[in-house]
Image (tube, rainbow, N blue to C red; front, side, top):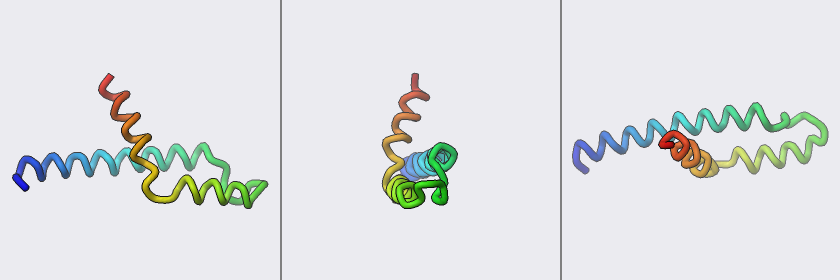
Length: 68
């Protein structure tokens, strides 16, 4: 990998990490807590939403909006 590619890769990784934190924070604010009635349903929702690999689509939407 060339130095330019490493820098670009690092920049992309940093961008994705920043956006993931923002998306996680928004989801944390918007979803009911795990102890809110009905607890079993909300725990299942949070388990599904906060599972890994679910941040690329919202990050792509944010990136597209930034371009506009």
